[in-house]
Length: 256
Image (cartoon, rainbow, N blue to C red):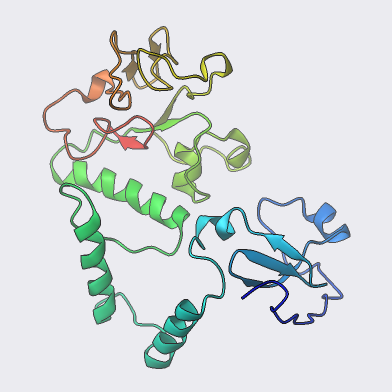
């Protein structure tokens, strides 16, 4: 359906915008000149006055298939008519198991279990809890440090802003989680280029850096040109750390 064929739906602008508190938004400035979206179709939003706006970010990276597509609308309508919600405590719905099986079939290696969450922030906090509990039940309860990356974003839950490296996201909330350290970020304007020695990032740390937990990172002497540079902190170079923790890429939050 073309933009010319899309029917304009008039939507009244609220008289009072004070009740709603918007996240990551300068609320006073926004409410002086609000940007209100009335509807969407395919890759465009439409404002309350009918102006088309290209959705270049796919919502918040969650509408990659486009907006208001007939097959998706019909699937949502059909599921709502069958069952709108099933509790996940002691109950479940057959399609939840079906989706989990489809995801694990696509996932690599031994990633063969799925834990559904309602948002990225909830997923990050759940992952941190799983990592801590994993080491605890294996008798490694002293391995509780969480390693994040400066400038990294891991959502807005207490765990996510603790391991996240955006200071403004956590400066008003006290000490947050204990046992968290951060590696230096990978941004280096002078070295933002491919090199013969390896991919971007292979030369970001010319000297060793040490986090307060004792985790050390060193650039490899001969970076591989076929794969990303992976960092294994010294405190995690133990054979039992294979399926989780710092043996994974240091760009991910890890429990060591």
